[in-house]
Amino acid sequence: MNQVVNALFISRKDIESYYSKPPLITWGILFPAVLMLAIYVKDPATYLNVAPGIIAMTLLFGNTSMAAIVVTFEKRSGTLQRLLLTPVTHRTIVLGKAASAAAYGIATSLVITTGLALLLGMRVVNPLVFSTGLLLGGGVFSLLGLIASVMVREVFEAMTLMNFLRFPLLFISGVFMPLEALPAWVKPVAMVSPLTYVVELVRFGISGQSYFSSPWICALAAAGFLALSWSVADLAFQRRANR
Amino acid sequence: MCPTIGEEVGGRRTDRTDRVVEVRGLCKRYGETRALETVGFTVRAGEVFGYLGPNGAGKTTTINILCGLLERDAGEVMICGLDITRDPVAVKQRIGVVPEESNLYPELTCRRNLEYLGELYGLSRAVRRKRAGDLLETFNLTDRGTAPFLALSRGMKRRLTVAAALIHAPELVFLDEPTAGLDVPSARALRGLIQSINRDGATVFLTTHNLAEAEALCDRVFILVKGHGVTEGTAAEIRRRVEKTRTLMLILSGDVAKGSLREACPAIHSASLVDGTWRLEVTDPHAAVAQIVFFAEKYGVRVLEIRTATASLEDAFMEILKDNVAGPKGTV
Image (tube, rainbow over all chains, first blue to last red; front, side, top):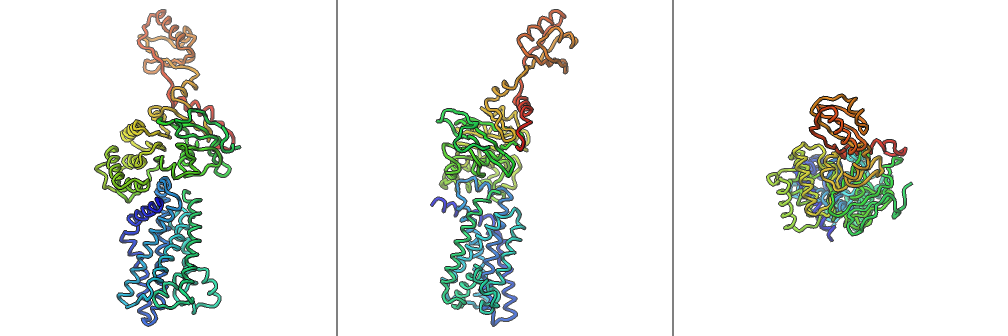
């Protein structure tokens, strides 16, 4: 229990130090908002096909970038070492860091969602599935950012590593076109991408429709990716956090 | 070859009840490089223990292992009766660490830095607020409480880093080069605070390059060279161990020739005159004094001052380095 409370203290400190800063908030919101606007202006009738992908992409980029930047920065400045000297476990640190990054990504995604609802009339027909998608996606993507951060020394290295993962994921995960429309050879590859399931959960939350027969298949798959990411992040932190 | 855990290598047997740190047969390698080789020592409750050595001797590696930041390859490490590997959280709850680099959160204020660390040590809100206020006052930083850490001067950053290590009133405090890079007044003030921490009951484990500082602060010192422990004891014991000759400082009322002084006093090994003061290296001070007095009477000069000049810990340290410079091949 004490370690969970400590994870909350770590999250709160990170939100206070990094995530509540106006430049970071605008960075997280501006890019997806402009992209969404461009897609809407091009074809107002079909923007809803792309909106779930843009929301999930906001989550992916916000979480992976921030988690990787914050931890790499703290490694460089020595403050991660300071944290490792306190009576908290590696798991507590992973939980605290991932939770604050996830909170940031979810908050920026919700801002985009709210903007779409208020300005373009988009509705969230199934808030439970929608929230499940954001929560599971937030967790998986934050943990991926943390894994990248302990593998490298510099922020730019973390970003380079993440880009090798993120851009292919955007292509294979039905972000800009529905899974049905993907080439046949991409569809099996899409099934091993966590982003696919997050996009489909968000899509179901917004439209009530999904490529999968039930949104809970997606939730189960995303939960599996969350468990896998957690295990890898935990191991990576134990082995490499102090390097 | 590194011994197995529990083997008695290099360790000293002392009364179990007063041991705060017990290290036996500690080994650490980085690839083919042996950073620590069967190092063993004991730190007793309430003492200031100096862990000395030249650059690359393995001091920071030792501290990192003792604090749970680094895994050892072999050996036994007990901190406050607990094994750091088996029970790292419980050990970290009882120790405070001041790393070589001041590493608090640059964007947080001084007070928030202390309170945040207090949160992680499980202090209640009221306790951590009071403790943070008390520490800011003790370390003369009360008026900087709302300033971010990055805005502090180097000396203030160092003081706050020491204060942060004390937020939970630890039993044992590790100080890694605490005064490195500080100006003379800041370093002197920090040394005073270290003595005060020790007077308040904390055991202090200190590494420093400043041997005068070690001599002034430490009850006992341990000297590490190339990953090997070479000697341990009080500063006076270590000085005595390496002293092969003693030095006498002599002032006479008139000029005398060096040759006649050495001829009349066989106990003098070497003599040099600097600013009217003779510096005499002697094997037997008692015999030398008697011969000098006899010599002065014979040549009609008066002995204005004669005193022994004790070797400093620095002299002893340099002597030890000379003896150990040709260490085993492959060490750091």
